[in-house]
Amino acid sequence: MSNSNKSSQSSSSSIALDPLLKDLCERKQSFRHSVATLAAELKDARGKLVLREESIAREADTRQVAERRAVEMEVEMLRLEKRLEEKSEQLKESACNAEMYLKELEDVRLQLSAAKATADEQASSAHSAQLKCSALLEEINGKNISLQECENYISKLGNQIDLLRRIHK
Image (tube, rainbow, N blue to C red):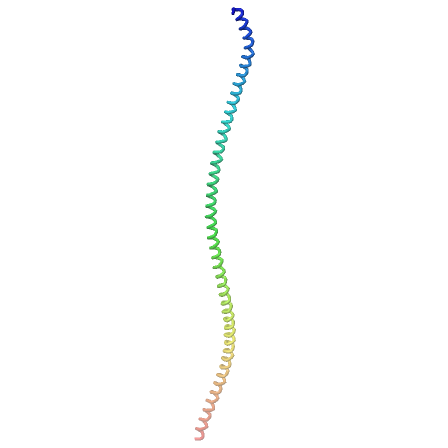
């Protein structure tokens, strides 16, 4: 082949290769762009995955804290429930004792009322007896006065009898 033939062949193959090279370059650019886009998407996805993993870890920590608190609250509720039962028992006991004391107090009130009624009766009887005694004392005083008068009269009569005897002797 001659040089001009080569040159014309080269020119024609250059012309035929040029659209292929151009297409290849475009595809290469498109591929690079796709790779860059995929790399950016991968980086973004990895970032989102890291954020999601961190969020899941935080949620797990929060859940553990919440579960621990729930267990602590359950233990506290059981303790408080037990204390409430103890206080309830003490209250029942106190109510029972109060009821017993109220019954005893009512019994004492009844006894006191009966004792007061008896004391009132006895005071009334004593007053009546005192009045009777006063009346009897007045009667005795009256009889003593009468007796004294009688004794004086008898003494006078005795003196008169003695005087009469002396005179008749």
